[in-house]
Image (spheres, rainbow, N blue to C red):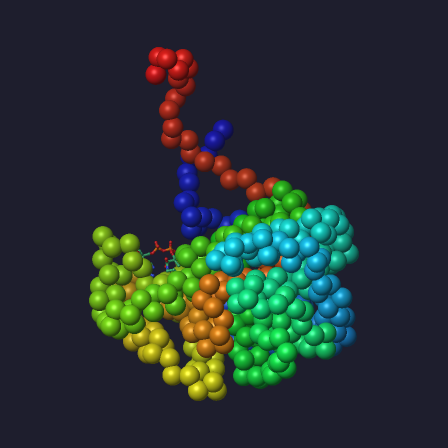
Amino acid sequence: GGVTTIDPGYKNTGSCESAITFLNGEEGILRYRGYSIEELAEKADFLEVAYLLIFGELPTKEQLDKFHSDIKDESVVDDDIKKIIDAFPKTAHPMGVLASLTSALTAFNPSSVNTESEEDMYRAIVKILGKFPVLVAWTMRKKKGLPLDYGDRSLGYVENVLKMMFKKPNEEYKQNPVLINALDKLLILHADHEQNCSTSTVRIVGSSHAGLFTSLSAGISALWGPLHGGANQAVLEMLEAIKEDGGDTKKYMGKAKDKEDPFRLMGFGHRVYKNFDPRAKIIKVAADEVLEDLGIEDPILDIAKGLEKEALQDDYFVKRKLYPNVDFYSGIIYRAMDIPTEMFTVMFALGRLPGWIAQWREMRLRKEPIGRPRQVYIGENQRDFKAIDKR
Ligand code: CMC
């Protein structure tokens, strides 16, 4: 028999048991493998958090060194990837490029599809952790017209990402500790968020035993949308539009509350957090630090702060428990770092990568069945076929 009830948007449907991320939306609690996000953002680095999410425990120094070294051994991509990047128009959205390249990696690494044993899984995991930052950096370099160069083996994971993204030809790249720290924090805060839209996508695609890279590519596509990861790009475009329009935040508050108007206050509201988003609190502080260090006075930040203040006092937002989410402030940092607006969601993908991997690995190790929801059919009953000249 079929099902009789549905749950659109799976608002109240659990899809799996998971030991990775704990989230309490009422109290604004987020923990990876039992460790609070506040403590991890303060004390751990991104690669440690990646290891923690994927394998369940904080690594020892030896484990982390081996993990990093295995990743570095895999941080070269096939030269033909450059040809694929070159074939995209310069105007292509980086999220579409990234999803395509991630899927294309399967063609160049066919063995990554076979992940029957934990050792096979490990190989596929270090491969993608090594190659993904190259794809991210090159996607941006293509946009900026920079040569597709590699980073530097001697650097930390995040330092290497920064160098790969920003190094100019014939110029030495100077690392800025404030930027390294801010990016490290941003990536940690984005690293996992239990069964969100892109993660559920990765698990469901992976549940058909499609390969890891293909499953991740599907996750990237899900993340692209403005109601999910694409919100960070949408926030900045919204703030710029408000600035261009004279900075009238009240007018846009009115639009957001008007049910006839499709405009939403981007970066506000969350499916699970109904009190505050703990990630937004940490990011807000990091944004101030970065802007101060770089000596940037960004009118966009004043508009963001103005909107936040008004929304927190507004009946409409208070009644619906709409608070700034992680994406409300991340774009301000990315912009200060000179990352183009269209790349913001790509940075989110770089951060979410370990979470997607951890969730995929958990799903496979637990031998979960193929994901296949049911429906309530509301179409026509049986009808007789009519020949084309009788319709
Ligand atoms: N601006 C104005 N009204 C809003 C907003 C907003 N940003 N978000 C929700 N509402 C209203 C919505 O119209 C509805 O009102 P009513 O009860 O009168 O019909 C009520 O609040 C509940 O909203 P919902 O759309 O039913 O809630 P949801 O859980 O389906 O959606 C959301 C969650 C995040 C998609 C939504 O809040 C939204 O569209 N926010 C803006 C986009 C955004 O910032 N997304 C990033 C999410 S955080 C990063 C990530 O994890 O991807």
